[in-house]
Length: 308
Image (cartoon, rainbow, N blue to C red):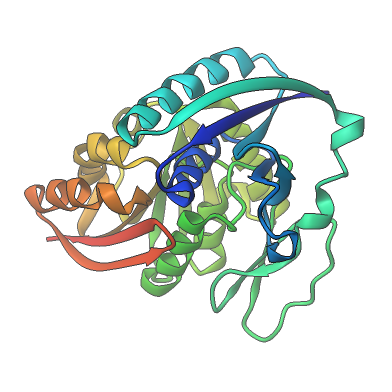
């Protein structure tokens, strides 16, 4: 298989915010490998953690997408959202493309992904790494090469920590915009009764299903569906709903989410940059959802609410 590299070269008044905004768009569209480029003036000793960082002449965020039947539609929607976000945040950018053969790329990035402790109980690791769980730890196996989210992005980290804090063993959990299914897996590992996921992307449904099976989640304990939230789950009630997508999409879906959330149920929302927090809070309050906790990591926010 070949891979398309989409490289977004950008200029912004605040480079860190620009980087985070562009990176999050890549994550939302199922990037299958992310790399960051910084100008040569940056000290090469400053780095590094889980995103590939290259010293270049220009500042960029690049992402790899599999060349498959969904690529053109995904690329078109990606560019549309990128342009909208760039205009909203005064980011100047240009996009360049390159096609990379799988043989050249498939193994080169693996050395950058190591087991990582995300919460007190949850450790995320790629399948090729060995890790022996300590007392009370649960291991989530997920490969960055195929996933929409692997736990290392701040929003996934925030969601997983809040799931650990608020979930109860009897809870049925719904993940809206499930992507890789990592939040479904985390919920089940933390004691959920049944986990359900919904996404508009065929690839996400397949990837999430594969990841759930990889983590030995019984098929009777999970459901992943493509389509419209309310049409798929209108007859069900969930004690916990989590959604890690863009703030504007969260706001547009909150009314439907409320319909499937049990009274006194918990809702965990992330994918929200700090500048968009107020629009999410305002919508939640108007719908009778009591905000019980807010936490941040870098430029990202998670909001926890309870339906009253």
